[in-house]
Image 1: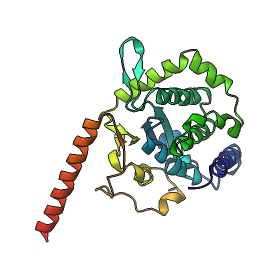
Image 2: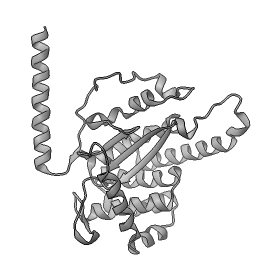
Image 3: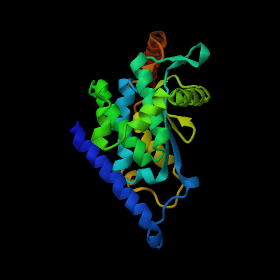
Image 4: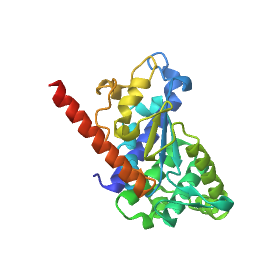
Length: 264
């Protein structure tokens, strides 16, 4: 994996260049056609901060949107709630404990305080990189690394407003149809990708209906039906659910092998 400060710096450089391009695009519309909001593909990521598979997806897969021209055709929505459960009196428990509740809320505050994707994604990417490296207690170092003022996040969390944001994300997650089963739960134009989420770029390219196909899409084999490798790791809500799903997956795989043998 790339050195973390270098990767974060590269991400910031991309956002700066993309913002500069956007501000000058009006003068060059004759040669460049940017997609309208109605043409963009919606991409929802429902995740929890301390799930290692969520962290891996964010820093090693989702970040690819910003390394290509794909981000220009995507409407990305991050929802940091995951498998948390609401108790009475608007309190909640998180799957990986109180520290996950803290970081979920911090990331919810970041999205609210810095609503622009170019503002909150580098922060979330930095925090999740530390999660991936098992250094998440050092998450506050991301403020210095990105040159951000920590006070708005601290105020959001300590005032209780972050908790309100989390409850809103809980409602959004619980309203999913079909309901989410695990995280990361990736949804493209309303359709969940299930355990094939690492192939999300192919689904974006297939869903995009704009005039000019992004360059990143021309290099891919677009998904045309059956998922190519629907067994990427996920965090289930409970051990029982995880075991049941793994058993079902093993049975399905065995039946597929048997059908293949019979057809031969």
